[in-house]
Image 1 (cartoon, rainbow, N blue to C red):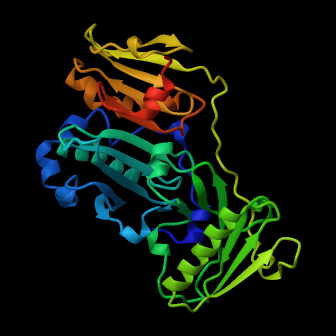
Image 2: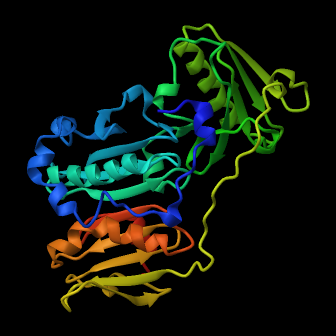
Image 3: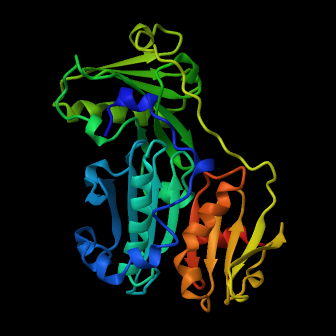
Length: 366
């Protein structure tokens, strides 16, 4: 994986030009039950309630350390499985997500995509599948972690033994919302510093916490805890310095020397909800608009696949009587559909008829 500095110059994945070439038309040949059963990573899945996370490394699914759950590098792709039970039932239920970093390669996110389907096959098609994109994660995905930390580079650029002469300083942004406090690495530039939030300048053996004048106690508390965790990882060697905006911030300011990086931001120009039908009843796959604005559960037909675009999330609803071809390519349909819109980065959820999904239910009209 490239170093931090290298990734700052890397080309960001262009969602408008992409397709999941490794995932889709050949999926039924690539992802078979036998292949899923031969994947070492799946041998311990789905046997108890809880969260499991893997990172894609050279086309392989590698276990992610539990202590690093919630940390994601923007040059990587990950698979996240949540195993749970509904009420008093003894049956295991699953949500499986593949998460794509903005500098993840096509090989990495393509592997994550088809391995997610492979995991779904291994678990007998019980899971609800989700696609997550960096900075546009679904509410469900964010609910799994106390803190989501977005870091530059890949895991190869991380460290446990500090070598300050080789370590590139990084700036971490702590911003609170209704989900809690989110942590994100941002370029070390003053244009990324907001007085309403808290920042940590991680310089290896010096860790500077900068408290904006308008920051709240939750952001400050989370940042201080994070600073102590970093220091503990480095055997307590780093010095922790806390500076408040307006009261002298020399240590913090001296590290702000990078040019700002322009972030991609996609929002739908038209917020109207839309429902589309996918059907091969005519002998070839057709895609047609069904309804806009007020979408109800009664608008869905068991014989076909539907794409429900809420403009903040896309749901692919798979009817019980759909064909094998329609079922196998559900995620691809949604991905390709989004490439033709002005909001391609929103989350995708694929669910079979009868599956429970609170976000889907909430998006439907009464």
